[in-house]
Every structure is written in structure tokens, then in C-alpha cells.
Length: 512
Image (cartoon, rainbow, N blue to C red; front, side):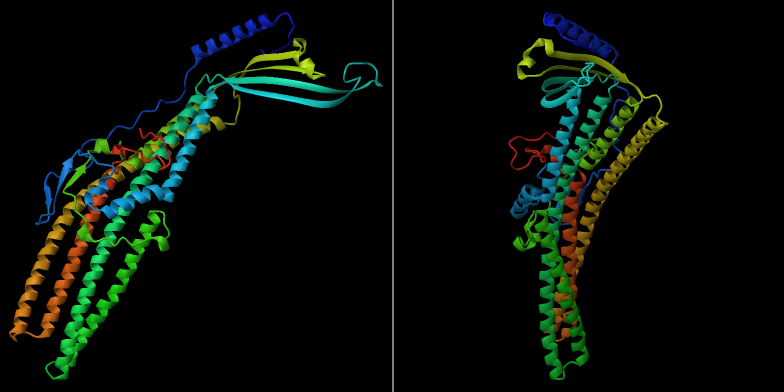
């Protein structure tokens, strides 16, 4: 029980021994009875090898551009270097240093770390000190003097040191710390997901711009070719060697081709502006890198993580798992709320009418107490909170499984797309080769007078449109190859410098 006493000046050592014995007794009982209620967290079981199928064959588009899948291959953090573009490497390095989205995530991660530090402080005794002076007026009645005319005005000086300690017998504080650490993990993996997404978006945007530049160049060539043909046919109409309907047909096609050029330029401008925002620059301050598809190298080897490794690598899956962990800890907190709380409190103070009185042991007051509080009736609120915590855990676990399934589907789609892209590119190149041969044949017939310029115009248009289709198929193949690295988690765990560390950090943040 709490107790108060004025400390005699000749018993200082005795009261310290009594205090020490009582503290040791209470702590010993706490250690013997202490436990942590609620479920101990266990990671969800790893996926089996059937979550998706890794192709065993080489992807070949009937040219030198071959790709091979490497089962359980290592995904490097700088995987984007497989495209062999210094401009792309420089752009990504700039984005990792100046992206405001990544900077915001890193700042939130630091805040989450401090929240963990703050929660861990509850495991230690809380000690405070206070001092004060007040001017008081007291009547005789207040001082126990039976004289209503007695009035005393005086200064009161005081100094106090107080301490409290929550024994955490049933582990509520420890579960709260566990929850905050799980929330820290969630913040960590969110930043990593932002990092991986940022890199992938830059690669995809660069590839898209390269494809648009190729489409614009090819379209301009088509316009020039159609204009030359129109000039020739106009002269033939003028001399009566052709009819105006032939020229009108070409004019219509030429107008349509010119109309298709501006949307391509618009898409390129949007892609360039997107690159600017990704690297943390205003569009007006960003120079167009002008990526070309010929400057990019198609990766020959594509590593593919096995499903059991994927769930330990993808940031979104790990973030979902962290929420499961936090929900599990919340069950322990809700369970502990139903049980008693034990704590120790105490203080030591001195009061006097003058500063010199504070040095007199006779003016010392102290208190040491142990208390227990327990809920007796809360209208079912606490038990409802425990049931809700269990339901939230079930929901978090279902969300985790849904996230993992979506990831497996994304990897499977990427693998299937890469195989399909190779065959599509092969077919488009075959079609372009056939269109080229047909164009050469028509040119030869035109030179021999066996064909008209209308036939030549048609053959040229077919060939140039086939080249557009080839360029589009190449862009799709590069983009899907980059998407596979994103689907596999981006390789952040193999980085030499943690993606969580800011550029100015002297020490590397942990990514364990």
C-alpha cells in the first residue's frame, strides 16, 4: 500500500534499505508472474513451386535478339543497366537523388523509427523533477490555530523528484512496441516499393519515348514518300496520263498521315514531362534525352525468382505481411486490456519557508506505492475490441494472400508476355520483309512501265506501315522485359547502398 512519512534525520540509511527491499520484492514477483498475452506472430507459409510456371525454353524472335530465362537467378538492384544506356543510367541516378516522392517516403520512415523509439521508452521507469516557489496567505483555521484573527503570509519553496514504473505483467507495453515495429516495417517496405516503382516507371517511360521517336521518324518518312508520289501523279494528271481520282486518293492518305503525326508528338511531350516529374524537375527545366530504340540493348538473360523467394522479396508482399504482424500484436493489446495493470510510483520532496530549509532532512517527504487497476464493467466494450482485433487479423491475412496471388499473377503475365512478344516481333518482321520485297518488285515494274505510280505508292505505304508495326512490337518487348524485373521485386535487397538511405545520410539504413 502507498505510505507517507516524514523522514527523521537519523534514519536516512534505514528508509533506503526499506525502499530497496520493497522494490526488489515487487520486481521479483513481477518477473515470476509476468507473461505476454495474445498470439505470438508467425510468418505466413511460403508459396510452393507451383504458384507460377517458369519457362524452360529460350525465347527467340528468329533474329539475334534471343532471351533466356534463368531459374532462381539473382535480380540486381541496378537491373536497368542491362539496357546498356548511359543516358538511362544517369536519369535514374538523378531520380533516386531528387525524387520528391521518394524523399517524402524516407522522411515518413524516419518518423516511424522515432515512433518505435518512443514506444520502447515505456519499458523504463519514468522519472521527473519539479521545483517551485509560491507566495501564500493562510488563516489560522487552515493552519489548525483556533484564532480566526490569525493571518500569516509566507513564501513556500518546494522541490520534488517523482518516478513511476509500469510493470507490464501481461505484456501490453511489449505488444504495443511489437505493433509499432511492425508499422515501421510497413513504412520501410512502402518506401522500397516506391523506389522499385520509380525505377521501373523511368525505364518504361524512356522505352515509350524511344518508341514514339521511332514512330515519328517513320511517319515523317511516310509523309515525304507520299508527297513525292503525289507530285508525280499530279504531273501525270496534268499531262493526261492519270486521272484526278488517283491524285485525290493519295491526297486523302497524305492528309491522314499528317494528322497522325501530331498525336505522336503530343504523346512524346507527355512522356518527356513524365520523366521530368519522376526525376524531381519542372518540365520547363528538363532537357529531352531523346531516347532511341536503337540505343537500347535487349537483355539476353532474364532472371526469374522462384515463388518461395518472391514472397520474401517483393515490397508490396512484405508490406502486407507487416500489416498482418501489426494486427497480430493488436490482439495481444486487446487481450491485455481485459487484465489488471500493475505499477509502482514514488516521490521524494522537500518543502520549506526558505531556500535554506530545502537542505534540512526534517523537511523531507517521500512516498512509495504499488497499485493495481482492473476493469470490472465496461459494457462489453473491451471484449468487443478483442473480437474486432481478431477479425482485423483475419482480414489482414486475407489481404496478404490476395497481394501474394496478385504478385504471382503479375510474374506469370510477364513471363507469358515476353514469350508472346518474341513471336509477335518475329511475325511483324516477316511481314515487313514481305512488304519490302513487294516494294522492290513494284519499283522494278514501274521502271519497266508495267506498273503505275499508284501501285508504287500503295507498296511504299504498306512497307512503311509494317516498319511502324515492327517498332511498336520492339517497344512492347523492351517494356515487358523491364516489367519482369519490377514484378520480381526490383532487386533492392542486392543493393550496395540501401535504397532507404537519403543521399546525405552518412550511414546506411538497414533493409533487413
